[in-house]
Image (cartoon, rainbow, N blue to C red; front, side, top):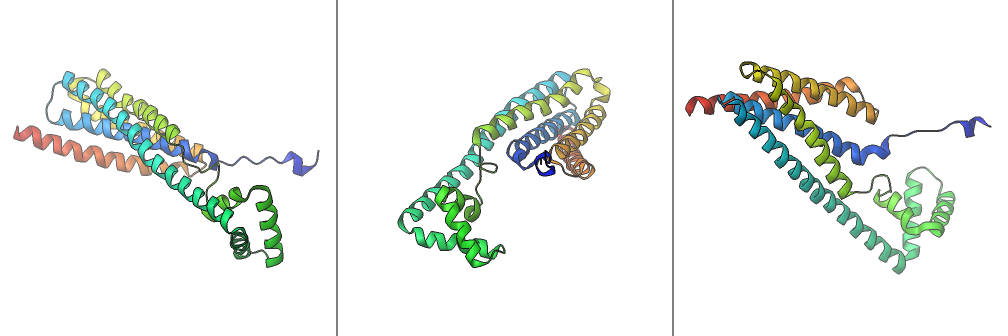
Amino acid sequence: MTRLRAHRESHLVSRIGWLRAAVLGANDGIVSTASLIIGVAAASAAAPDILIAGIAGLVAGAMSMAAGEYVSVSSQADTEQADLERERAELSAEPQMELRELTNIYVERGLNRDLALQVAEQLMAKDALGAHARDELGISEVTAARPIQAALTSAATFSVGAALPIAMVIVAPPFAMIPIVSVASLVFLALLGLLGARAGGANVWKAAIRVTFWGALAMALTAGIGAAVGTVV
């Protein structure tokens, strides 16, 4: 076996679609539910009321994430399909102009014109729409929008993320609920940042610090609001 055959590359870009949705869902689940719990607790609510608020936040948030992801990613998919239909019509109506367009793209990327023309001709002979989708529009199988995948992934990971601070409400004594939920949620966020960055091949510490900072800020703000409302009421 040659070295070329033995060398197998494993790129992580194929994970972009579901990984983005998963990290977004889990992060939002932890931050929004923990912030809701801390805000309600800071308003001097009873433990059962805090638990009910957390569960309601989990259900509402999961449905909101699913609907939001599906609608937004569907809009992206609709735009991609519209561009592909337009490109298909142009290829049918003016194939030579499209050939020149693809040739110019390859020239701009560094090929000489003769070689760029040969590459464009051969790629268009095999799959003209695929070549233009990939090299002109930037649409490929790896990066194409998948609304259902994004919706289900976000809803599932939001539910898992939201369940973590709710579990802390169940096990924490009432007098220490706010600090326990806060610290545990920040630990969960740091772990999420580490796992997400590792899955995507990014800097794990940078990701952990980033999500922890914004989570701490959200919890501090809601705690302040809850305390102010509780004092007024």
